[in-house]
Length: 66
Image (cartoon, rainbow, N blue to C red):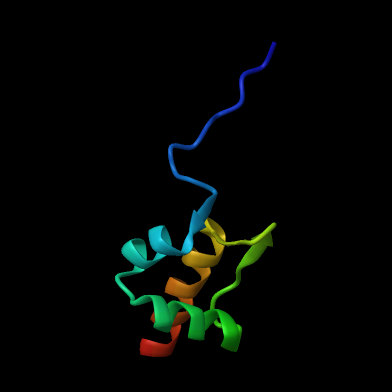
């Protein structure tokens, strides 16, 4: 039986966790989601930010800074 590698990084972050990870305020985070600069998904009433979206947003900032 093959074992899957399990990442220690969460795959989905609540807004409060993404705020801490990115060092941004709640209002800035929601504005980024509204503008399409930060992807998010919704599960029921909960807004979640995929880890991949956080990585993509950081890469976007790095490209814009270059």
